[in-house]
Each structure stands twice: as structure tokens, then as C-alpha cells.
Image (cartoon, rainbow, N blue to C red; front, side, top):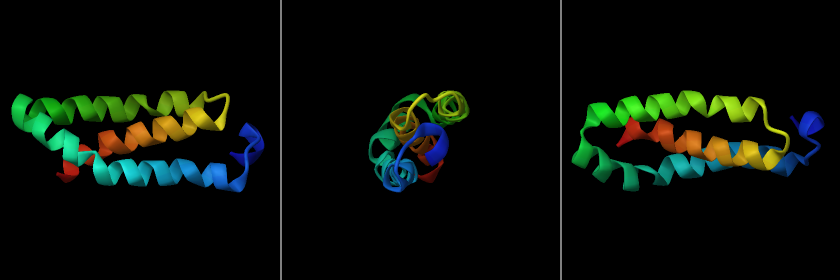
Length: 82
């Protein structure tokens, strides 16, 4: 990734870090939403969103896109952890 996106080692590791940090804090927002609209709908939406987040990461022209979408993917993955 460092070679393909021309980024530093720190920037490459920021993608993994953003996933983990968002994964930790997203349930604070997602848990009340799932209570309001139902767990089935929340799990279905988050599963679809999680899967779709792979596309921009694979086609990313720079590291910023990877970091943002890994964070969003971490939020979608955390919906099962509440």
C-alpha cells in the first residue's frame, strides 16, 4: 500500500487505527438507532454498508480515501458489538 499510494508507514497504519477507534465509539451512536428502528434493519444495513466500503478502498487514488472508508467500515462492523 505504501508503494501503490505513495504514502508513509505512519499514514498506512492510520487506516487500521481509524478502523479500531471508530469501532470502539460507533456503538454509542448505533445502539440507540437500532433500538429505535429495530436490530434486524440495523444489521442488514450495516452488513451491506460494510461490504460496499471495500469498493472505494480497492479503487482509492490516495491514502485519505482508504483511511476514511476503513473508519466507516469499522463503524458498520461495530453494530454487532453493542
